[in-house]
Length: 526
Image 1 (cartoon, rainbow, N blue to C red):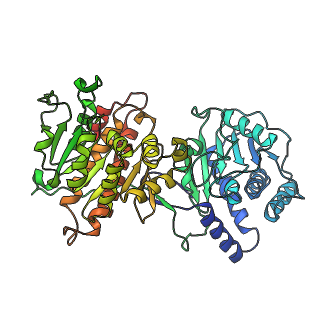
Image 2 (image 1 turned 60 degrees about the horizontal axis):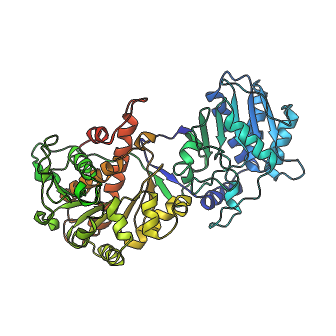
Image 3 (image 1 turned 180 degrees about the vertical axis):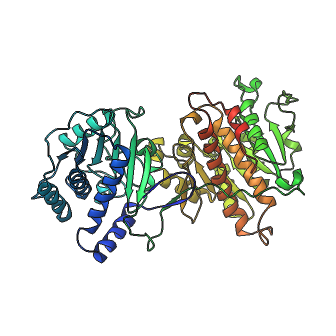
């Protein structure tokens, strides 16, 4: 068993793959072995989390997830720990393995109750109600479970409001394994932070829904036990990102060794009375702190700003003075309505391009710009990264925002395939996708990033990583048309930057507001 942390990558598997792994293992092992192992892992973690609990309430569903809970209850009770079980099933209707675990619990004298017991902060709830059962029988397009029963809803509500910590077995009940969204009728009444700490013990495989959408709040700390069954025969549906490899900078370096980044954006106040030059300057600051050799700033403000005394390292340029074909361009931060006029040129000339914010909105509204973006995807010497938040992604896909959030992995893949480029779909558990490869879910970051300008900082950092990658390609990858340039470089730069951006927020002291400017100053140069 291990606690999942952002210090290494982890393979993620959907429900179908998990079921295949489970079926193969069950066929190779003695009957009931997997459930016994699941119960042992659950009991072991329960004792580690609440060694002095006066009551351990184990809420068991009618299926095999409930059987895991019954098995854990039997083991804890035999060891002298104060267990109370509530069970939605019956011996006559339970699956064979769950019925056997019920019999073992019954024979051991485990106390069963009709209602949840009173609990305090020192106690523990164990959620063994639903697991991945919601997804297994539901069509992929709907995720519709059977109508939740009154007792199930009552127990879930009681558990979510309890002062006692909760340990979820395999998956928080109601959460869909693939998406991190709640099934209809099973979402909490409020999206506020849970009243007590939450933990999830993933069994056999790690599921992507634990790490994106509502998954991070629902799951809390994630632990993993493969039950002695390695998932070697299955391909992951996605990966949980680990820290990027950072190469040491050679002493014999100069500013040209790390590439130029040009920031194009920042509509001026005079245009429409809504000045947004700050967004472009935040992106520029992030590229600078992120290690770019030079950072050029082409503000779309009609030349109003002529110097940046607070950041003299930034080099102001008129847009028409940029050598777009020789630089990495970050376009759209604070671009407002002004960015549309320069986008066609940027899309056609920039060899490496990060598109953010108003550049994405302008493309979504203009079929000609969409065609230019798709054309870049067909040029192997053009690296492109889109960095939308869910609303921007919805505009690009011409779909409601709720549809994007309903399946963030699918939305990121759809964007990547439509435009032939890397996509960084921002949000809790940001998703990085590119055509023809498994997506990556980013594990770093927190709610401190929910403030204006942090997305601009991320775009600037992606630009810095893209610029550096272009000057440090592997031997043989510098030739125009190299597949490395367009596919791997863009994807890796996005994943690299996203992990570091979130990790910088994770290092910020708790209880102190994090501004976008402060975030930029925390970024590492490589």
